[in-house]
Length: 391
Image 1 (cartoon, one colour):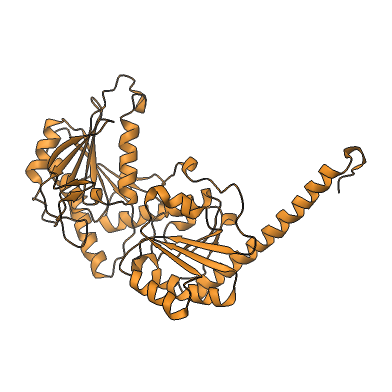
Image 2: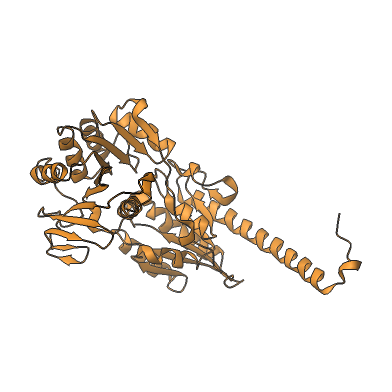
């Protein structure tokens, strides 16, 4: 996924495999484009908004509500969306990594719109890499790459991805990572010069994630998890830990949002342990409903096996949830220690222990808040002139 920025007319060129899906990267890029097309963005008060997005046509022809779309559509904000007639793999929102499928179309758009900067997001976006590779041969175009993920060095996926990354980023002008851990990982994988590396942590609009006004049932603790149900998200740890916690604590309930290949395993766990009334499975949760789901909980559980930043932890903390998480990648850089309980290692036993520590913390906080409310009631019912504060 990539976008191009033209400062003279403010052109954003969004180009990627995932533009048709509802992913955090897509929503971040669309948010950036909306902000940059505002008249006061970057101090250019006389800016003429002209935003461009490029995406591949899905195999089923369904691209963000435009069945069988090819060509250009224009949104009210000035966002022009180019739908390229490029087929995508049936199981994923990805184009084949041929590097020349969209060459002519990408080149024509970049030249005709006089783009100055091509910005690609995602180490696995073949269309984004293709835009970077061909943009370097166009005079006056600079290239920027943003990496949102961590990859290993020993597994097959990591080895192939790292070789591809090294090839694409051999002469990129700048690289942006979302955490210090991500910076070190990307620099090693791509064998990049540290002088072109930059760290810009993820952020959220906190007004979209506000705590609930009134507490839920005093007798129930709800643990929320919203994640794609993939192996690297640690769904196996969730499947192993949830029955143990439910067996030990009758007042604990789980809410699981998200979809993916491990959904069947999660449903089998619920049925096997008879937890239909203790574990609520929501399936896919639209981004606009994430905060609403989080406000139903008391604890947010993150079991990721690898994570460059973990913006969902910010969303959970902003919503008022106490966070329990594995301590991997850039996660320790997200929240201060008093807002999160880390698992000692990546195992179901450690996750269970971390949840139990979080439950103890919430119990202590409830007692502390109850004592504070009793003291406030005493103040309002007593004569202020006769009240002597405790030393």
